[in-house]
Amino acid sequence: MTDEFNTDIYYDDDADGSQLENATVAVLGYGSQGHAHALNLNDSGVDVIVGLREDSSSRDAAEADGLDVTTPVEAASQADIVSVLVPDTVQPAVYADIEPELEEGNTLQFAHGFNIHYNQIQPPEGIDVTMIAPKSPGHLVRRNYENDEGTPGLLAVYQDETGDAKERALAYAKGIGCTRAGVVETSFREETETDIFGEQAVLCGGIAELIKTGYETLVDAGYSPEMAYFECMNEMKLIVDLMYEGGLGAMWDSVSDTAEYGGLTRGDDVIDDHVRENMEEVLDQVQNGEFATEWISENQANRPVYTQLNQAEKDHEIEEVGERLRELFTWADEATEDEEESAKVQADD
Ligand SMILES: NC(=O)C1=CN([C@@H]2O[C@H](COP(=O)(O)OP(=O)(O)OC[C@H]3O[C@@H](n4cnc5c(N)ncnc54)[C@H](OP(=O)(O)O)[C@@H]3O)[C@@H](O)[C@H]2O)C=CC1
Ligand SMILES: CC[C@](O)(C(C)=O)C(=O)O
Ligand SMILES: [Mg+2]
Ligand SMILES: [Mg+2]
Image (cartoon, rainbow, N blue to C red; front, side, top):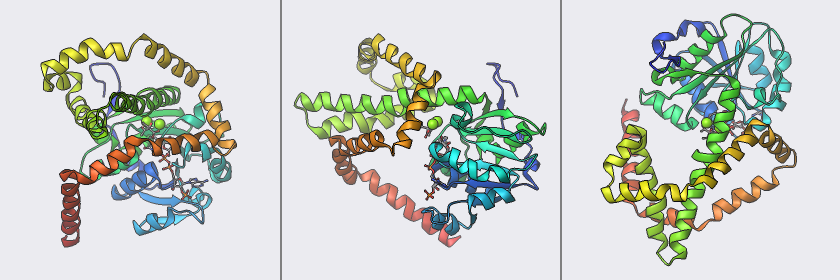
């Protein structure tokens, strides 16, 4: 299917689920993406086996969810498609273990291109290498599927030895619910570089710093932490929901003219040309491999920087204020009531 932007977007009707009819999919890892792919594929009627280490802390959860669990090596040996959903940093070691189990015509499937693009995994000839990368945290991939909704995803083919790599990847995307929303074709390089840039500069790093800096500016000026939390953190979701639903226009339409004029005149004083230059530098480090090399070394050294920054983020005052305020919100109670109600309905069914 080609849309008006001349980008290939694939939907349910473009994917042939029968490509997976006689296939076994090994899902290695049962974390954020792993549990979502395994459960969605299983619910879509695909034969799934989960690969986890013997002492894995995820084993109980996967078994309690009714899935067959074995070791990564055993799962790979039984599978036609091996979906590598352990953390990026452990994928090379897990891959080294399972490589001898890959047979000609098998598929090695990823949800992110890091290890292929930065040459940490070099698959042999004879196997297909594909990617279906949901553009969403894994828990929402599962939640959307359960709500009969989809999650947009990216498809890329790195190696097509069977001639069916793309068709199988599309069938996999259908199985996890991505073709319900739409799947866009790209390359391993483009997915890897845009994904890493996006999470560093905008989605995770950029937004967390924007929120904390706004919060600190208000608190340092003498305003109450509660006020600063509402203004800089809580309302962020509500504003982003409007953008998600209808773009920037829906957000500007919904906020007051005062907010719109102030935002349009002052926004680029905050996110100014320095920020653009910083973003370009971040992108350079992704493109030239500097970030990948740093992240690989950081893991080899047992994550000293990661550990320190992870703790500092947990210790930030906004987290304590937020935890206290969220306890008081009525919507938190309503969410709990909704969950209780839905658990009761499921039990009654
Ligand atoms: N998080 C997300 O939403 C997204 C992730 N991706 C990509 O998906 C892939 C998976 O990421 P994500 O879901 O975040 O991963 P997680 O960190 O959630 O994966 C954790 C799982 O991997 C298992 N695991 C960890 N180490 C090992 C090991 N050495 N051997 C075997 N199993 C191991 C863990 O089990 P144990 O109990 O044994 O530790 C657990 O089941 C990555 O390529 C990532 O970039 C793509 C899009 C979004
Ligand atoms: C935004 C972070 C992400 O890229 C994602 C959920 O898509 C990730 O790597 O987790
Ligand atoms: Mg991403
Ligand atoms: Mg990512």
